[in-house]
Length: 301
Image (cartoon, rainbow, N blue to C red; front, side, top):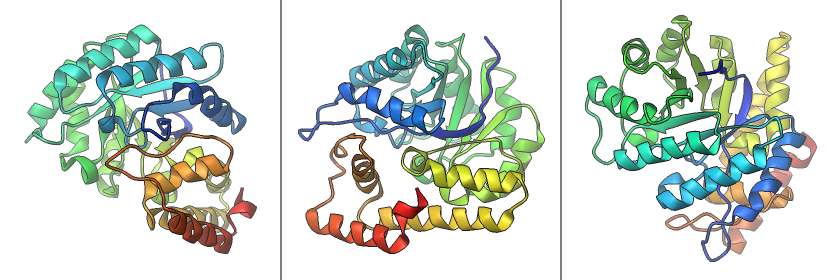
């Protein structure tokens, strides 16, 4: 396995859909060009932002194949989320990601029948990782959505013994104490996953962050990161507050639908979300536009 490390901002890409709910892979090149224009060179696909649990396994294969095809010959690296409530599906997706030329794979915990302890979680991760033996494997820790909350420092120590490709964690978890313990091991990538608290993660020492806002607000987040690293905390705090307020404005009508609307507003059509999520109604769009104007979003970009 080649050396692999995560650095900087990593957008969690939307899965593009047509208005009838069909997946629209013809939009992927536009998404890739948009990210490259903002100097974003690693992308996380088919995760929470990508509505992976609303996709069939065949759609997830096609999405991976399209992104890896589009990325070929560009600086883009593709991390494919392969997690599923069905372990055999996750294994098949991991194998396919390697065949398709992905740069890494990630998987969250099963969330219907949940692993009750670290032994069960590590067994699930090991079964997936072994199907893509040439790729780095990341565990995607997001207890707010999976309901699985297990000690990540211990996970890293124990899982490393049985998963030789374990590269780290996508840490979408506001437990800063556990974050610091993971970072103190100095053995794995810890990619931060809560955009509204990026400044806190930087203060703890993270070097990379995976998030949905980096699709449409990368300039804000990059100014935050740059200001933090040059010791300009006043500017870093201001940019972080902008992200907080932007996320709050998007969350009011429904975060994912609003984020996809905002992508279209920026000239990158990714379509509506797929049921059970619903697109914004006209009156919700008007409220969102009023909020964006009040915040001064155009000037932030």
